[in-house]
Image (cartoon, rainbow, N blue to C red; front, side, top):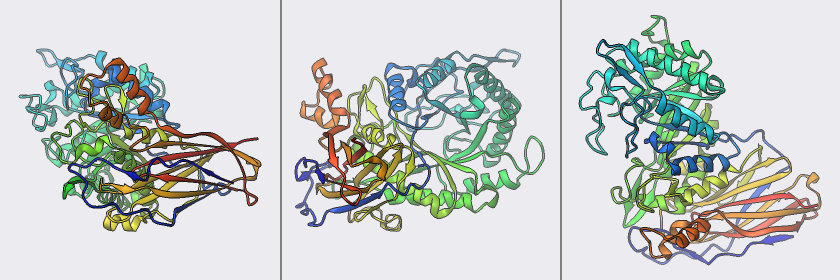
Amino acid sequence: MVARFPARGTWLIVLCVSACGGEPRPSADEPVSITVDATRPQGPLQRIWPFFGYDELNYTTTAEGAELLATLVDSNTAQVQVRSHFLFNNGDGTPDLKWGSTNVYEEDDAGTPRYDWSLTDQILDTVTGAGALPFVELGFMPEALSSRPSPYRNTSLTQLNGGCFYPPKDYGKWAKLVSTWAGHVDARYVGVAANWRWELWNEPDSAYWHGTFEEYAKLYDFTEAALHEALPEARLGGPAVVRADGEFFRQFLQHCVTGTNSVTGAVGTRLDHVTFHAKGGVAVVDGDVQLHLGNQLRLHRTGFATVASFPELVRTPIYITEADPDGCAACPASLIAGAEYRLSPAYGAYEVAMMKRTLELQDDVGVELAGILTWAFTFPNTPYFAGYRALSTNGIDLPVLGAFKLLGKLEGDRLPLESSGAQSLEEILASSVRKSADVDGLSAISGSTIRVLVWNYHDTLVAAPSAPVRLRVQLPPALGGKVLISHLRVDAEHGNAHARWRALGMPAAPSEAELAELRLAMAPAKLLDEALTDVEADGSVQVSFELPRFGVSLVSIEPGD
């Protein structure tokens, strides 16, 4: 029996900077054929996606921040981990764009350190209280330790020129700060050494570090010695570079393998995981917003290949601790050309497609990928739908969060999936997704529940026909003769509070009734209530549906007997 879900219109109109020109092409006569074989599980699914981060760590303790953390934990079957900047900065804890502070370290007139953990305790209590784990970014430099403390704070949103980005004037005092704070959190929280991840600094090959490579390598050596003195089993990595193809990255890996350790004088420094960043790029081409998934993946491949070039590190876990379509998260759409994509379902489709292709890259290069972190959170006290790179706005989930909610439901063993509409990894690396769309999916089985995530992605945000999809799933005999099929969707018309806000006239201050409408509109939508479906004689079921451009669907199959 074939279960059919109603199409929601032949055409999908998505966000353009200017009017979408030209006539959209009609749908192809042949549907995209997607097959899943649930009788051949391939081993545990690598859930590399429940990692999120943001500059403004003091947003964590706001009502919006705490609520979003709880939502992320509730939406993922795997452990959520959270990374943020400014952990050691001086200040009173007032949140601001691209700024944060905790005031953990000061010195008296004699130069004796004074530690204050009250603000970091509040932040980490909120993270761990929500059920997430910290991915600790150790940085930046406290004012009393900075080798150039004045001016201490950045002079503008886009200038990274503050004293907090300079090397320490005393590496020993920095090391003592690290070990003392590590000991404090170990006493306060459960499973710190076993479960938290640690990283030194952020993008030291950029203006986030006003020092030399040698000074960063020295800082890493002192940090590693201090952290592992306090927590021998803690896992520390770096260098979180902005350029995985740069000399800084290779120099750092070489230092950890064969360099002279600044603390011990021995050869090499312990490196528990490797981190780097990658941003795909966004542009406006002939009036249309265009993303660049191919460039994102090429950067991932370059980072993987660099790690693999060191035999000593090829099995070292890799975290891409910022992986995003573009750069400045704290810059609204009014400042970034093409950043309107952040409000559209295209953002979510990009993310889920990128996750699968990066898993393929891992296998191709032969490295150990441990996680991909999305640098997006929320920006309290900013206008609704301002186009920051965020997961929610004023407590209203954006479509990208809906896509992550669907992705987060995948668990168990990965299942083989083939799609006639998929672009190959080689094609995307060479040409990105600029011609045909990438209509593909991921599938997993957990217990007796099969889930199939399907997306329709293209780099260019223009009008396009929906893709007819015919999904066939070969079922394990244990599921019986009848199954329950359900279908959740995020696209232009489903799970899209931004579209609803526009339909309401884009109110700057939505009323309670309007907020209720936005909350209803933001959740991934049921295309069909659970449908009891007969299993075919060959042990399969088929599901046919229209998948709009940038749509993300989750089809779930459970026993019906």
